[in-house]
Amino acid sequence: MNTEAECSGVVRFFVSPSGCDDASGSRGNPFATAARVCRAVSELRRDGRTAVNVEAVFAPGVYRFDSPLVFSEECSGGEGGSVVFRSEFAHDPAIFSGAREIRGWEDGDDGIWRTILPEAASGSWYFSQLFVNGQRRYRPRVPETGFFTAEGNWGEGENSIEGFTYREGDINPEWTNAADVEFHVLHIWSSSRMRCRCIDGAIRAVKFAEPRRGNTFWCDFKNRRYYAENVKEAFGRPGSWYLDRASGTIAYAPLPGETPETCRAEAPVCERLIIVKGRDGRPATNTEFRDIVFDTTGFNTPPEGDFTPQGGINMAAMAEISYASGVCFRGCVFVRPAGYAVQFGPGARGCALESCVMADMGCGGVKIGHPYMGLSFGDGSDAAGPDGVAASCGGNTIRNCRIMHGGLINPAGLGIWIGHSSHNRIVHNEIYSLYYTAVSAGWTWGYAEPSLAHHNEIAYNHIHDIGKRLLSDMGGVYTLGVSPGTVVRRNLIHDIYAFDYGGWGIYTDEGSSGIEITHNLVYNVKTGGFHQHYGRENTVENNIFANSQTDQIQRIRREPHISFFFRRNIVYWNAGGYLFGKNWDGAERGAAPDGTPLQSFELERNVYWNTGEGGTAPVCWRMGQ
Image (cartoon, rainbow, N blue to C red; front, side, top):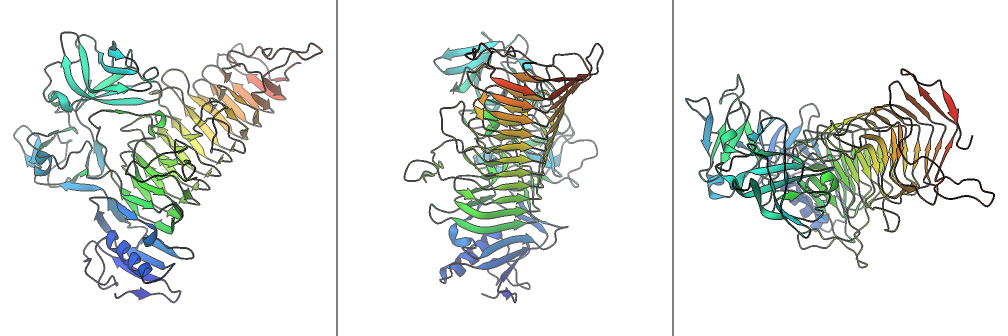
């Protein structure tokens, strides 16, 4: 194998879209694919090397993936080594794409472009997303904008719902290809995409292909907003498209000025692009991706529907890392992922995202950890160790990243989600334009369950334009469970607006405990700069909370212990509304032996100032005074 070596001992391979995988990988005879580099690294490791130092240099251009590129322990750097995949020029980066071009458009007399995809007709390629010149295009929906409201549940059983009833005139029972219509329903903090079995006009009921099961109390359909997507009869609006699966014909209604000669249409062929996955005791190590664009992955609603949990955490990520250490993405761009951009899963330790951009996301940005204390990968391999507990994930860093414009397929997506994972640093990021929470840490509800989410740092982040009045029960920063050592500090959080309730700046939800919340500036939110559902001994200190639309500070549960300490904060607002929400009488813990009431919170040395009409002068108030 002909390679080029630096004086440092680094083996360098070159890759080009015009290269050949049978070539040597030298500058003059480059490889064609990233997969060939992985094989070359494995060959070096099989020569008896426990570690290698390899740099793969990618020339500008598009490298298309039909399936994920898998990095095992054998094709990683090893202890003391490194494998670096980088663009040759940062200003003209290599693009790793999970999309396939669609060509052969014919411009019809009706102004609609059409072409036939044999793979779609045979059932080997079905897609739900289309991009034209890098811009997302949408399938036809009813109503064209806004939402309908479901009348009630249909076929309701024990923890299952078989459909919903609709209001007169909203749905047409005669729609063509009803089995391809998807009903996208917004619940409280989550959403469902349900496939249709049939539409029964006699009783005005949409009947699902499979019943909606699990968590139906929170995720039912009565009085929920929804729209129907992929309705053939609604096709024709400029920028919309429709794929007829039976014939394999895709039709596109172009925007003004678009022509088949000047438009590049692409559709996804895979859900993931990169999988770095070692084994228990043999992690993949020291692998870096630098200045690479990861572009486009796909998602199709399964036959049983997609009723996502909180945060849409069941959705796949464009790059998934597990049983790995020292995996870093630096200066990379993740654009148009159908689910999340990156996941650091079980066994991912000491990994990082540095100076990356995540944009145009179907769901969210980054997942860290796992949702269960023990779980399976779902591919026959087990993520649990000998004690049945999933391999620990922690010590990962997300720094100087920009995470923006998410929730375009599943609006419940999070900017950054930390499940059962500790010692992670979320610092100096900008997170904005999402329909749900920006940063979520913890994945247990209450005090009893064990949690691996502790000692996480959420600091120096700029979080804004969250919620956009679509979902409810959200926060700029959201926490769950017992989380000793976790700090939320020096963040700038503003413009958090929910559809109904919620829309808090900092939201300590069920069981949040031992969290330090300091030196944050929170303003322009819907229902409180700080809100605690219930928790134990959280410290809220030296923050500024300004201009919530309703209550400035909120809590819900009265508890027999100190829920939080609220000290040396400034609370400012210039409109009507209350300073405190409900449950602030302070006497729910009974009384001390001397008869002094005991509070489940402590307010000390805070300034409260309302400058609105009929407002109050600055007041410095200490509980009990």
